[in-house]
Amino acid sequence: MTRWRYAAATDIGLVRDSNQDAIHVDEGLALVADGMGGHAAGEIASLLTTKIVSEAFRDTPTVEGLSQAIQEANRAILADAKETPEHFGMGTTIVAVGITTEGDDSASPTLFNVGDSRAYQLRDGALRQLSDDHSVAEEWVRMGRLTAEEALTHPNRHQLTRALGVEDELHIDVVSIEALPGDRILLCSDGLSNELSPEALARMASAPAPLDEAVQQLVEAARAAGGRDNISVVLIEFDEVTVAAVPVKKTFRTAPPALAGAPRAGAGRHVRRRRFTWRVWAGLAFVGAVLAGGVAVVHWYAYSSYYLAPDNGMVAVYQGLPNGVLWYKPVKFLDTTYPVSQLRASDQALLTATITEPTLATALRYAAYLHDEWQLTQPVMPTTTTTSKAKG
Ligand code: MG
Image (tube, protein in one colour):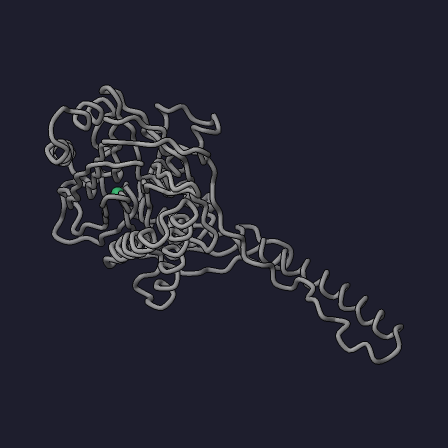
């Protein structure tokens, strides 16, 4: 049996013109989603996610059920973005704790995470981060390519490696939480964790005050520290908690889409004629399928990534590899709204060397991020400028 109390708040912050974060919390599920994408699309992605996941989890409160619900939210965002061009490129993070039941009906807390919203566990005033950030900088820290200190200021620190709404294939970190009664769990968007130090988070989130006061104090502190992004906080405290009989620690993933050109079954359905003819046809079909499969693989490889490069003074997104593969040359996919002149000099140099990204969404997000970084170097706000909705 697991029971918790909770308090939560979400705040627009001081700089953004909309709140693209969404939260949900009840007796069985707590979640924070941090949406991204222009024209209020980030809001749609995060709201779709909280709605789909909370409703599905109510029906199926299991690890499998919640994982499926997150995948369903991913598909819904992709489908919506396909239908509505202004929603193109929208996405969201999700960090959630669900009280999941197992076969024997015991109910224990499980953490689900995609993106860089965070989950922390608090015990006796100490703070421990439970979730891994899926950002370029943090992945590099885990690979040993960067130190934790370098990651704090790295230019790729806000660039996500995983989010809902990017690709059909989704990887979700799922971990059982081992907790004691009195432990608290803090879920938050990066608008909180970027503004406050771990020490400040620990102090305020574990203050022996009622939960809603602690939440309020966290939001106000993040605003006082700059409030540069939307701020979302969910704080839960266990009254009673069970540890999973069979703890989970794995990454759920959707199956990759089937490769086009794979040989299909059923070649021998009408075996009326001579065996010889059937075998010849089957052999030819097989060779054809292998060749088609090979071509499909090369084609896929040639166009499976995107890069940013200057074109007529604008930052443009190209599909393909900068030098092409065999006869497959890269093609210009679209112009962003960012003039090259509105990037920092160091980023302009980077741009001519081309910046490769795995998906169109990440390429667009990175272009927006570079433009945001330039904007930060500009004197205080002129009247109107193009707003961009990069993560961060
Ligand atoms: Mg954020």
